[in-house]
Length: 71
Image (cartoon, rainbow, N blue to C red):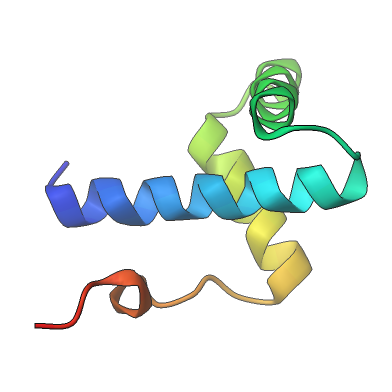
């Protein structure tokens, strides 16, 4: 996985953590742990779960270039 793909993946995870934090008032580490348990309980990869959450809440994933620094 290239560095751009890693940044995009981390961005989606961070967005899902934020969504969980607003729905279940908790700090980021607890929200991340909840996502980890949910992915294990459902038997799916964490990335697949967070993509599902972000697209369900937001309608679509943001373009990865939206999070790239300007040149």
